[in-house]
Image 1 (cartoon, rainbow, N blue to C red):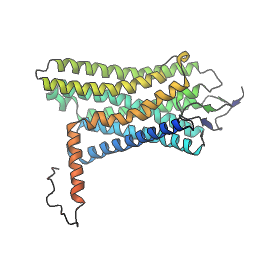
Image 2 (image 1 turned 45 degrees about the vertical axis):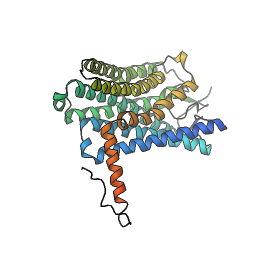
Image 3 (image 1 turned 60 degrees about the horizontal axis):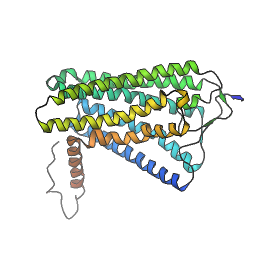
Image 4 (image 1 turned 90 degrees about the vertical axis):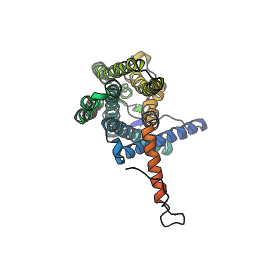
Length: 326
């Protein structure tokens, strides 16, 4: 097969065909993506505006929302434009950018979830020492470290992937550029790169995942020693919901990046990639935020403020509005 340099555009075959059932699925995916953007933007806004949320825990949560918003914004608009216009080409630079951004955000979120699990461990198991064990200085270091490690991994894999010569059949059976998918088109020996990528994935996925499991195991042990049933129930509910999101994110990422070559399937890859790039981001604000009584209270106060501002100059008057703290 003839080789080509990286000046020729790639063709993204996409996630959907032009059939009625696929059109319905496209609308569902777009609805989920819009809900994800709105939900994460709302959480980010509430944390920014309400001084009650200016704590390490909510700062980490705001970074998670920022990462999710950026990931959806990087993947979904291009996918939607390709589907609606029928123009499915993407330049090598655009492809490299998608690889870099998706890996930066995916790797960064992996370490950020580990940081959040440590925060929960300290809050549940050492509440009196929380200001010392989870200081603002440590919180900022963990956040910067998450972004930096994700960016380093993304830059390395994007540069290495695009350095290979590609065959004339530049069709990518996917809805965005992902390093393991693109490497399959290379007309060169990629075994060394794949081994290095596997090691990176162990560090970027399995190490944080192990830390998360350790943190929640210690939390569970502490919860079982709680005397009140209500406190135990609340802690169990929080931990189980957090672990469900963590399981979806890490399970999908491990499936894509650490599966043996012989078990790979393009259709499976597309569906699983959709889980951690489109569906998981909509779960994060629901699980981590909107089930939280403090966040729900802040949302209600904000809505009341908006309602009390509207009647100015109208007949009803806003004088009887509900008092809002802060």
